[in-house]
Every structure is written in structure tokens, then in C-alpha cells.
Image (cartoon, rainbow, N blue to C red):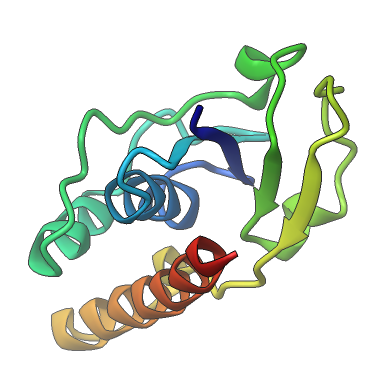
Length: 138
């Protein structure tokens, strides 16, 4: 049975959705991930989808959603990817999931040229991919 993973951040529009797609593709059925936010933006940042596709990751059907949607559902692992979400009081997830924090800079806050913004998204993607690959070794 696949390990169930919930990836959390505040807006659920960039980092957590990229991590969700990475875990689902690289986990090859061993891991099944969903993502959510404490204050969901209500949209997935188009740059997140572009970045995933540019790196050969299928984004699937990503959407920004509240962590309340998953309250009461059991998870094996809960991963926070932003410092703000790590400090917030999460809903209760039964089964005592293992909690991990992957501090990742928010690429949506990047300013500058298209190249600089793309570099910020690529940087976040690379950080998340390395952490996912490390997770999958365990």
C-alpha cells in the first residue's frame, strides 16, 4: 500500500503543489501525495506548472485547496514547505503522521525579469526534488 503524504504551505499555489507532483511522479506508486494550504490562494501559480513541465514532471490536476478538506483523513507523513505553515496549528490528522519541515523560499515572491523569476522557480523546484529523492530512499 502506498504511503499517504500531505504537503502543506500557506497558499497552496507554488511549493506544495510542486512537491505534490514530484512525490507522485518520482514515488512511482510507493507514495501518494496531496497538497493543501492554511489560507489557499484559490489558484495554482502558472509558473509552478510551467516549471514542472520544463523539468519533465507531469503536473496532473493540481488545484489550490484548504487543509480543512483533509482534516480527519489519515496520513503517514505531513510535510510543511513554508516556515509560516510550519508554525501554524494544523487540523488533526489521525494515525500520528510523521511530520517533516522542508523550508523552501517562496518563488512567487521573486521580482525582476522573466529570467530571474524562472530562476527562483527552478531553485525551489531543485530544492524540493532533492528532498523528495532523499525521502524516497527511506
